[in-house]
Image 1 (cartoon, helix red, strand yellow):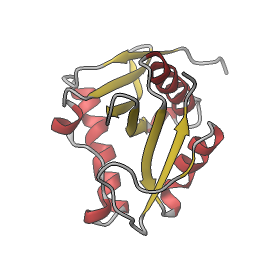
Image 2 (cartoon, rainbow, N blue to C red; image 1 turned 135 degrees about the vertical axis):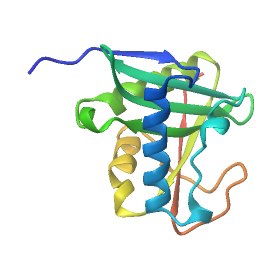
Image 3 (spheres, helix red, strand yellow; image 1 turned 120 degrees about the horizontal axis):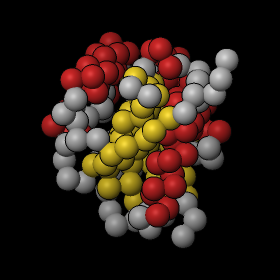
Length: 158
C-alpha cells in the first residue's frame, strides 16, 4: 500500500463535502457529550474571523479538517479536528496537527491549547495530542472545570 499524499488548504467552508463531514462531526460530539459539555463550533462559529479552518485532501477525496481559534495575540485553541471515516489510521490527524503547530509558530503563537472529551470515545484524540507534547492543564479562556472535559496545552518555540 502506497503512502497517501495529503494537501492541506485553508478552506472557506462552502463545499457541501466539507459541510457534510462537519455535520457528522457535530452529530458525533452531541452523541458522546452532554449538551453543556459539547464545545465544538458549528458552521457559523468556524466561519468567524478569529478562526482558521483547514481541509485535508487526498487527491479529490476529503480526508479531514481542523480549525484553530485565536484567543489572544500569543494563545490559540485547536477547536476541531476530524478525520473522514475512510481515511482513519492513515496519518491524516498527525499530518494536520503537525501543520497546525507549524502555522501557529509561524504566526508567533506561543501556546496552543485544546479541550477534548474525557470519555473513552476521545481516548485516541488525547493519545494523539499527548504524542505531540500536549500536557494536561487547567481550563483556559471561558471554560470552566467539567468532568466531561480534558484540557491540554503545548508551549511553542518562539
